[in-house]
Image 1 (tube, rainbow, N blue to C red):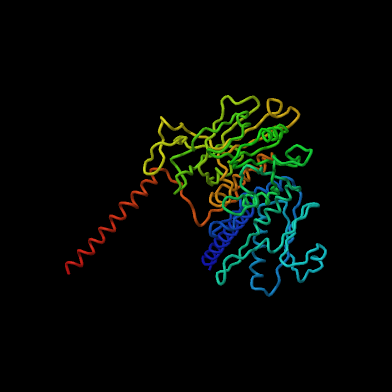
Image 2 (image 1 turned 60 degrees about the vertical axis):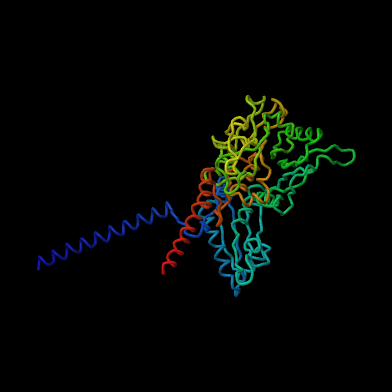
Length: 487
C-alpha cells in the first residue's frame, strides 16, 4: 500500500506541476499578447488594414492629446444590408481605436436611443458624428457606402475609411485653405472630369481641406491691378500653352516675395516662366528618358525618388509616380544667392536627355553626339531664403516646386500612376509648410498593375512574342499535319 500511495503521490505531483506549468505559460502568452498585439490581415489586397495616411493622422491627433469622440448610429432594422453596414462601421472603429490613444467611440441604436439622437441633432440612420472639443464633423450614410455595378452584379462598397480620413483632416485643419490654379494660358481645367482635367486632384485636395479656385492674372476689376489673393495657401502654375506676360511674371514674383509657395509644372516644348532662371532652374531642349520605363509606353521613364519630404513615403512604399514625356530640368551650380535647390525626381544613372536621332527597335537610344548626359532631374524643390534675393527680409522662407510634366496631375495619370495622387498631396502639404502632414500614402495595390521594364526586357518580350511563339505554333501545326498525313 505504501508503494502504491507513493506512486499515486508522484503521479499527482507531476500532474499538478505540469498543469501549473501549462497555466503559467498560457498566462505569460496572454500577457505578452495583450502588451504586444500582433494582427494579420488575410483579406484581398489587405483591404482591412488602415491606410498609412489614416494612421499618420491618428498619430498627429495623439500628439495633440485632445480626445476625439466618434458616435455612430445604427442602420434601420429589417433592411437587407443593415447588418453588413453596422458590422463594417464597427470593424473600422475598432481598427481606429487600436491605432489611437485619444480615440473614444460608441455605437448607438438609433431606434432604442432616440433621445441621444435628438440631443445630438441626428435625424437619420447610419449617421456618424466626429467631435473634438468644439469641432464637429457629421458624416452621412451615403458618404460611408456606395453601390457599384448594375443589376444582379450591383454590390455595396464600404468607403468609410475615406470619409473618416476626411474628418480627421478637418480636425487637424479647422479652417479651409485655398489653392489657386492659374488660367488664361491653356492650363488644365480644375473642374473638368475628362482625362485632361484636374477634378480627381481637386477631390483629393478637398479631403485635405483645400478648396480649388481659378486665378486670372490678366483680367482685373476697373481701377485695381491683378494680384494673388491674401488667402492663397498655394498657387499652381501648370501646363501653360502660352507665355506669361511681363505683368503676370511680376505679380507671381511679388507673391513669392511675400514668402508664399508656388508649384510650377512645365512641359517639353512649352513656354517656361522667365522667373525660374532667377531661381536657378533651366529647362533644356529634349525629353527626359530612361532605360527603365512604364510598359508599354516609350515616353514614360520611371523616376527615382531622391530623399525629400515629398517622396520619402512613396519611396518606402514602392509606389511609382508616372510622368508622360517629361521635360528635363537643369539646376544651376552654384545656386543663386538665397536659393537652396534639391532634386526630387531624377532618372537613373543610365538616363539621358533625348533630342532625336536614330531609334533601335522603335525605341530611342542614347547618342552622345546628340543627346544630353544623365542622370536627368525631372522635379526639383527650391527654398528661397528671406532677405537674400527674391523674398523680402521681413517675410518667411518661400518654397517652390518645379516639375517637368504637367500631365502627372491630370485625371488620366492620377488614375494611372500608383503614386501620382500621393505625390501631389505630399507636394501641397510641403509647399504649405505642413511638414508633419507629408509622407501620405493612400494608394492601395490595384487588381490591374503596370510593369516597369527596361528597354532590354521590352525587346526580349517583343522577340518572344514576334518570333519564338509564332515559330512554336508553326511547328505544332506541321507536326499535326504530318501525323494526320501518315494515317
